[in-house]
Amino acid sequence: MRQIIGTLVGLSLLVVGSSAGAWGLADLNKTINQTNFTLDNACSATLISLKYKAVLTNYHCIDRKITVEDREEPSTDGTIKKVRREKRDDVTLAQKAYKGPEQVGAAEYLAEIVAHKKRADLALLRLKADSIPHTIESTLLPDGSTVVRGSRVYIVGNPQMLDASVVEGVISSVTRMLEVPWADGEKVPFYQFSGGVTGGNSGGALYDSEGRLIGVPAAGGREAHLGFAITVEAIKAFLREACYTAVWDSTAPPPEKCLADKKAAAEKSKKGNGPSE
Image (cartoon, rainbow, N blue to C red; front, side, top):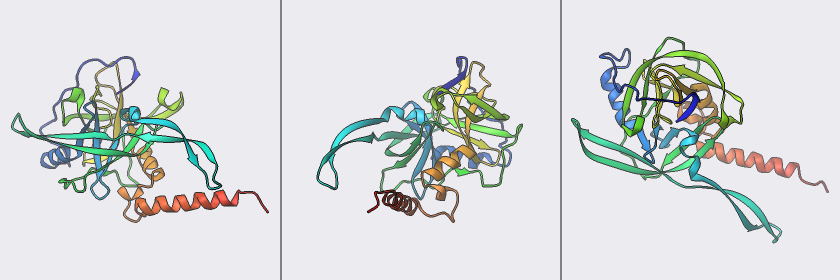
């Protein structure tokens, strides 16, 4: 968990009211049970696509899994050149099963890091299993919809590794632009919400009253009621850049085609900028 204002203290209350508004309690619990993961026993992560087995989290939850290596590789003209290659280690995602208060099982999955962006504090993972038993995914807020101050929200994650916890709150502000170290001191937009964020919540989910994913909790402050989330606009911009627009837009090309088109365009541009004869 990032700390923006002061030092975070205490635990958030792990309770939710007797009514979940437009999002019924049965659907709320199904969504949490199937889409919330613990990540390397330290963070949270959220399943956002069954089709692509895509899972969203914070960059700072996986940054230690990314290293840069210097290598010597043969070039097309037969010479050896030094190149820098990024190495991404897999992460472990886990979910526990309960009967009443008793844990009766657990499932672990390896996931690869598909894309990441430090400035946005976001990372996209893909479950490496051939198939997954899940039938529910978290759905992003549709294009054209907006997040409004005062609206009810649910913060889902694993505070202090108390897995699959939910806290009820409200959007406190949609106009927070805060300077953050992971963006090299640049200002980044956040949703501020009540309910707070504590260690382990990072990478989880911020849902609206209809159960739509509107943010990724990323930071907290000294006061327990202060929480800050990466906005849905930033999430969508990140997914577009990573060629995963199809996660929420069925008219978009699948990631494989988008990536192939981007590679072809880059190669064409490279050839076009080559030396003239």
